Length: 254
Image (cartoon, rainbow, N blue to C red):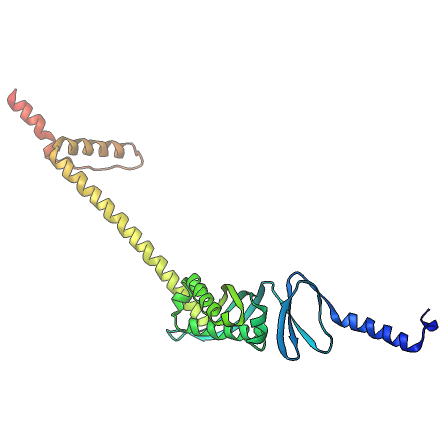
């Protein structure tokens, strides 16, 4: 069919098809296109069908979805001079496609480098015990710093999580010894508290028996009864003379 047409018309049709193919762009729901016309920013368009002027307009696509970025392990020297490796993960998204393209050369690389340096800086200002026990505080501090620093780039940092803390082997052994010593200390304290409570109860019982002499005699007889129930041995048990005083007084009165 095209062979029957004049050559100039065929050329025009081909040029029109190429023009339309270059001029029509389709963007996904999560994409935005920053349009530059002759080097100057023109507009931000998308999603859906957009039309540009070939050879004049240039587009830069920006992904508006939340991006998960791994922060590789960073060598950190803590405030108490302990060498550790700390890794993290950062969740962020582009809120302003115009700023993400114009205000920074490569927002992904820039955010990654900023996250690494911020992680080293924050952890280097804390002691090891704080880093291990206060992760939530570190996460919030990192998120606040990164969000404030990336705001001019049109980026919103929604979450930062410290993922892993790698300790030297000698530090792991020292912490294991410390934990074992702490458990022994608690066990000794619990045992001492038990002894103290038992002694206090004995003191209270002795004070009560002192007010009632007959209770001591009944306790003595109860002890004899318990010993007598064991027939495997012979027991010599001294009998205090105080036990017979009530009987002697009764005889004297009679």
